[in-house]
Length: 160
Image (cartoon, rainbow, N blue to C red; front, side):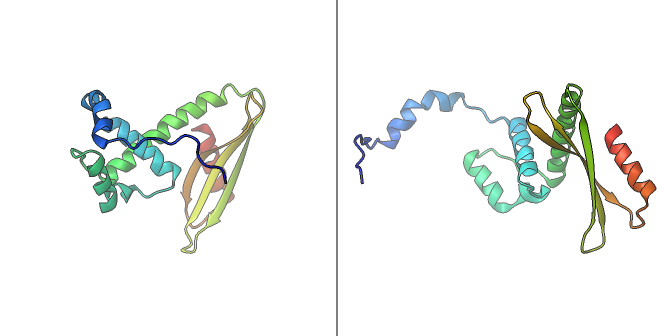
């Protein structure tokens, strides 16, 4: 096993803070940037909106920023819906410039508790020949699912 040729010196922690003291003085917490980042993380990792009120999460946030104020579940939901709206507009813009065809698919399923859900997705190849898939709609269905109801939901997702 090869040994490390270059070893690093152990530095005094105080020296590290002295080197970054000016940066730490200028650093400011951006609450809106934090909320946007948190919303995107919740969406990406499929977390619940109540994630932001968990004790452990708030304790960690307080360690990072002692002035941190907890965000409610309803505020988190609102922030996530804002992110959805922004991303939806970006997708609409991107879809207008697709050189080829756009394919749509839908999937319907029922949960154990007999609640029905439907998704509508698009599939397309972009300018760099990369296959893309985007979820357009995720909606709850009434118990009595008819072809007319399903076609209406699909059409509504595509128009939106």
